Image (cartoon, rainbow over all chains, first blue to last red; front, side):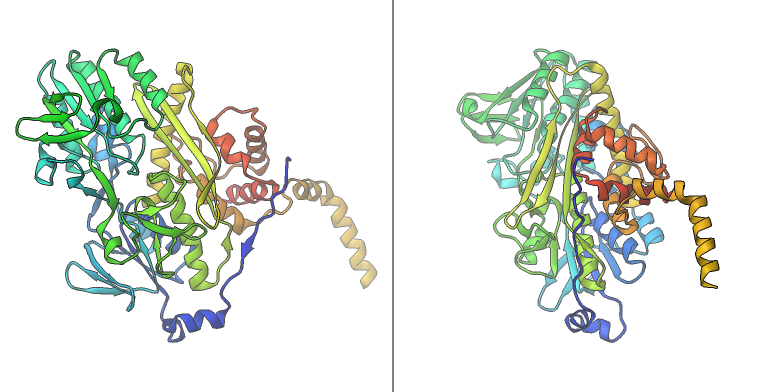
Amino acid sequence: MAKITRRSFVGIMAASTTALSMPSIAFGALPRVVVIGGGAGGATAAKYIAKDSKGAVDVTLVEASKRYYTCFFSNLYLGDFRNYGSIGHNYYGLAVNHGVNMVHEWASSVNSAEKKVYLGSGATVSYDKLVISPGIDLKFNSVNGYSPEAQSIMPHAWKSGTQVQLLKNQVKGMKKGGTFVMVPPPNPYRCPPGPYERISMIAHQFKKTNPTAKIVVLDPKNKFSKQSLFMEGWQKHYPGMIEWISADTHGGIKKINTSTMEFETDLDTFKADAASVIPAQQAGRIAMNAGVNKGDWCPIVPASMQSQADENIYVLGDASIAKSMPKSGFSANSQAKVAANHIRGSLTGSKVFTPRFANTCWSLVATNDGIKVGANYDAKPDKINKTSGFISKTGEDSNLRKATYEESIGWYSGITSDMFS
Amino acid sequence: MKSKFVFFSIIILLLFSNKILADDKALAGADFEYGQHLSGECVTCHNSTGLGQGIPKITGMKTAVFIKKILAYKTKEKDNAVMQMVADRLGEEEINSLALYLSKTK
C-alpha cells in the first residue's frame, strides 16, 4: 500500500447549538431542506439528504417538469445513438423510495431573511437550508440578432427538451449539399466539450444521408475542450465536411439575420441552410433572485458548496463558480454529495467528511469512437483545486475508443440511476 | 470461573485465529459509514441497481476481490484512466472502508 491517508471528519454542531440555530427542532418539527431544481445537482442532493438522514430531515424538491430530459446524451439523440425517450426520467424513485416531497412548480422567488421560497402558484415553502441548483439561463442578446423568438429558427438546444428535437428535425431536413452553421458559446458555459460533440453528431447524420453537406463553426473562442481529439476525429471520420473558424480568424460575429439565415463576420458573411446558435450563459434566474450571485454566476465556499452570500443557501452545478471544475452533470452530481453531507451534518449532527470532488466528461466523435477527460479535486479555501487528471490521447486504437464509448453508456445508466432511483 | 473463561477464550481464538488475522490485515481501519459515504463517488458510474452496462457492478463484491482490483488500478497494472485516477487518491483506510461497505451491499 503506497500510503495511508487518514480519514478526517469534523463532528460538528453540538446538540445545544443545533437547537438554538433551528427553533423548529425545539418544537419537535423536522429540520427542512428545500431544493430548487431537479437536475444532476438538485435531484442528487435531495436524494442523498433524504436517503442518508433516514427520515430525520424533511426534504422538498421544487422542479417544474414532471419528466426531466437530460442535457447530457442529448447529442447522442441527435446522432441517432439514443432515442428521445431514453434520455427522459421521472421523480417516482425520489418520492417513493426516499420520501422526497415533490413539488412540480416553478420557484418564483426566495426570501432569504424569512427563509421562504415562493412558488408560481402563490404558495410558499419554508426552509432551514436551501439548495439552489437551477442550471443556466441563456443570454440571448449576447449574439446580435438572436432572441427567444429566433430559437425556433436557429435552435440553441442547450437546455434539452423540445429544442433538441427541433434541431434534429432541422438537421435531417436540411437540403442536400447545404451548409449548417454552428455558433458555440463563449466561456464559461455548460458542458465545455458539448458543442463539439454536437458538431460530431450532426456530421455523423450528414455522412449517412447528406454526405455533400458542410458544417461551418463560427467560434467566439480560439481554442476549445478536447480540441486535438475532436479535430483528429473530424479529419478521420468526416474529411472535408467541417470547417472550424476561430475568433481571431473571423474577427467576431457582428450580426446574425434569422430571416436571410446570414452570419456576418469581419472575415465574410456566411449563409446557412440550417443553424444552431448557443449564446452566452448565466446562472438560472432564481439564483439572481435569491441574491447569491456575483455577476453572472454564484460564488461558493469550496468545502461545502455554501453560498458566499448566505450560509443557509447552497448553490450547485452550472450556476456556481466551482473553479477549477467544469460545468457538467458529473460535477453537479459530485458537488451535490459534498453539500448533502454538509447539510445533514449541520441539521442532525451527523459526520461531515473531508470534501472530495471528481468529474469525467465523455464525448462521442463517431460510431464506437469515444473520448474522455477527467479530474479529481479537493477543496482549498479560495477554490476547488484540481489534484490530478487525464485526457484521451490522439491516435488511440479503436478497441480503446470503443471501450470508452461503452463506458459512457454505463456512466449514463449509473448517474441517472444515482439521480432518480 | 475466571480461568474457565480464559480457557474457552483461548480455544475460540485458536479456532478462528487464521480467519480473524486475515480479515484484520485486509481491512485495517475499515469503517462502514465512511465506506458508504465514499461509495457516493462510485455510484455516479457504477449502477447502484447493479445493471452493469459498459461499467461493471461493484456492489456485493468480496472484500479481497475489490481490494485486489483497486490496487491493480493504483499500481497501473490494470488499464483505465478513470479508475486509475479514482484509485490514486484512495488510501488504505478508504479502500478497506469501501471494500467493507460494498461487500455488504446488494
